[in-house]
Image 1 (cartoon, helix red, strand yellow):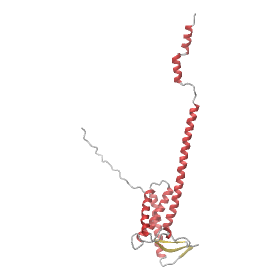
Image 2 (cartoon, rainbow, N blue to C red):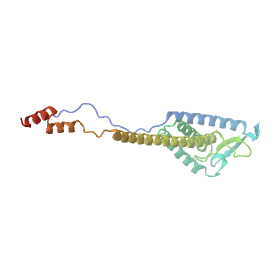
Image 3 (cartoon, rainbow, N blue to C red):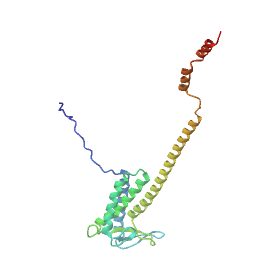
Length: 226
């Protein structure tokens, strides 16, 4: 009995989470820009002054312990935990998105959620009890920041990408149905165009039974009385 074993070691396949590099790059840009502008706002507007920019837009420092656009005050820890979960889900799911627009939107969403999450983690007296720094003030709209813009624009683009992808799938399904119907029509036309004459096998069978024309004539001459 052969007891030799294969010396080649067996490789074990390990599950590795996939990520979308393009989405992570967009997220990193959003987080960086968000934190830089918040650092500037804390230093430039920390004395309570307001800086007019254009029309009703002004820079006005504000701190938010709630949700985006200064809503949900006092729910900071709960919102922070939800933000962590959302970031994880977005990072994992973005790798399974084929649309470039959807991946770009996922990057904006991830960056916006991370930007405000960092504030809740490190800009307060306790962990998850920090306040989000807001400074973009139109005076007729809740004060917000760059991270809020990333979340809002990312959500809008993600919805648009989903709508476009749905339409693309509908067009592809319609094209497949049309191709299948055309193939069926071609098959029916081919069947209708086929001749009703007997095929070669039938003709050969008839000749085998009756004999060739020459043999039939010879038999008739032989049978005629002389």
